[in-house]
Amino acid sequence: SNGYAEPLVRHDGVVTTLKDAFGFLRADGFDRDIFFHRTDVRNGAFSTLRVGAQVQFAAQLGDQGYIARSVTVRYAYGPVEPRSRPTF
Image (tube, helix red, strand yellow):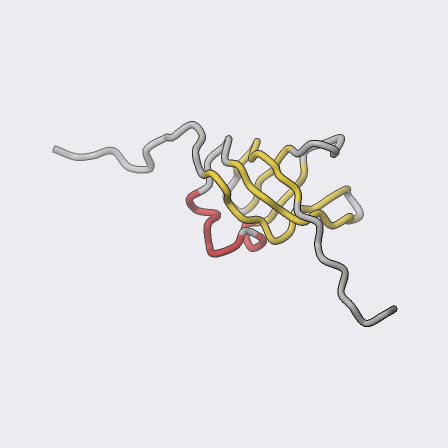
């Protein structure tokens, strides 16, 4: 080791699935959707994510395949579903 940390390669991806505490995203060069946990989404942005959001991430190889780490939101658009209905 030369003492220099290798920079993490960042990948572009699109969110395909969202659950309560995790989701999956799709990215070129990966043969299956990549798991991510809400705690790996930077700046607490997990709660604002929508399916279709464009993100960047670092990929870590785990026992079950790749895991997305250090996920940052680039474009948070996607199908917008209101979280609460306005009352009149």
